[in-house]
Length: 149
Image (cartoon, helix red, strand yellow):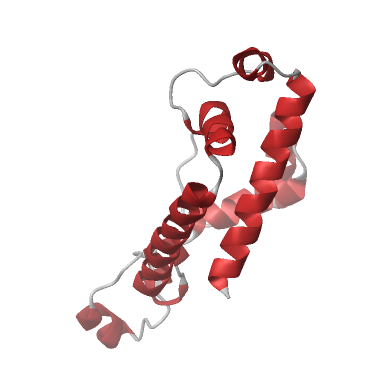
């Protein structure tokens, strides 16, 4: 049955045998049979082929890739550069201690400082460092929001 070569569809008996052997429903066997008998369609047919065969539905015609949309890419790049500029400007307006805490906690590539390490540096409690960090982040957010207006 499996190596039978022929043109056409399986009979109902053959479908039931396949479904039992494969442990799937007869509907799944029919669905697979439909997919196996379907014609392949080129993703991007040349214009001449589309015109001759009246193929105006090649997938390239209706499938959109938002990542490749030049307008979207340009907007994302501009927004990223804009946000980075405003972040750097706002960051520089923070007091030196706040800048140091945020930089050592979040902006270092290698080893980020723990609350305990910063607390020892500034001779305060780790809780106080957490509060200062939270306050600095809030200030940054406010300055960046004001810059967008």
